[in-house]
Image (tube, rainbow, N blue to C red; front, side, top):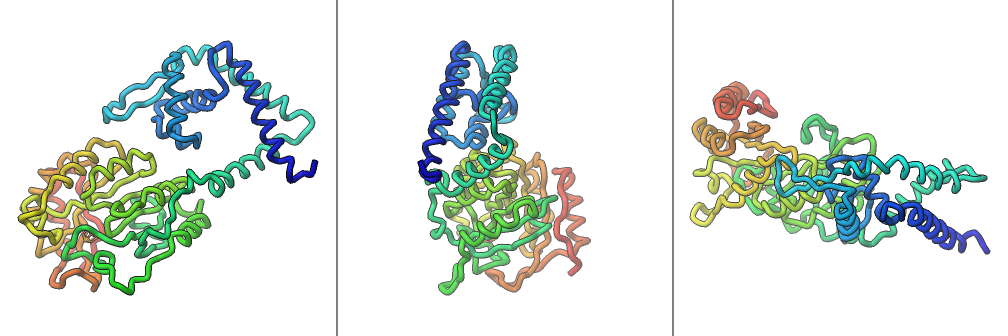
Length: 384
Ligand code: SF4
């Protein structure tokens, strides 16, 4: 048989025979070959969530749930509630596993030794890993389902040391926002002029592919990133191995929870625009109809600590008094991290006529806020 046509056949033979081998040796534990990768992954990563297992094994959610539930029913795995978030279940192997796991590793070694007879198996494994990676990225329609051409991306900063705390990152700016903060530094991202030239998401993905290992993370900023279906884009970025930071105005708490629970977000930076009384004015919305409910939900969700986060406020002289910032701090306390950012006039504001406090004044405001939130810091201070 010609080499090209034997690849699929050999793959199928290898798959079926290893399955039969594991079904046979695991039968004594009332386990099948399909459960093995889940059992070993949980054993080697104690406290993982069901989503972590799905991401790592690259099988669909339904298969993970079915296999792990069976392991739980058999007493091999325990699901315990997370101490900080009651909705999150963490998985651990039980004592029953510690009694058999060495035997299972031994069966795995035997299998490997049989397959390696008469060949350079280490090279084969390395090639196989590359082939599997190619298949995940390019062949699996479920893993790559979104036509990214619908995404409106307004810009990219290819490298920044400022946007992701402690990391070298790229920042992607999604276009469109549901607020109209008058001091917003990029009005085009909000008002989307007719001749706006959007970036091609695939070109950005190619850029990030090339920068793997050189950049630590990617910031998804806006606009408001969750107004569009950016989660699939984020999943793809995460799969490349990047840390992902999400910037949000906090107006979409359900989406925020969904994004965080996808396991693809490592850090969230949420804008807190002002104290409750001045919120509508500060986001350029009608005070009569604006509701703070969504903002409050997002604040409450982040404070549970499911994901690392910061709150931040861009401080504008004409919009924020010391009393406003103290009232804001009372509202969001206790906050893990809170940054007062000095306003900077980009020349592309939604509305003119706003100015910044001096660095000295910013430090005074920070000192006042620290009475309520001791972790408060200033960010981006320049003399003006
Ligand atoms: S500053 Fe306000 S208007 Fe501008 S992108 Fe952020 S939330 Fe939207």
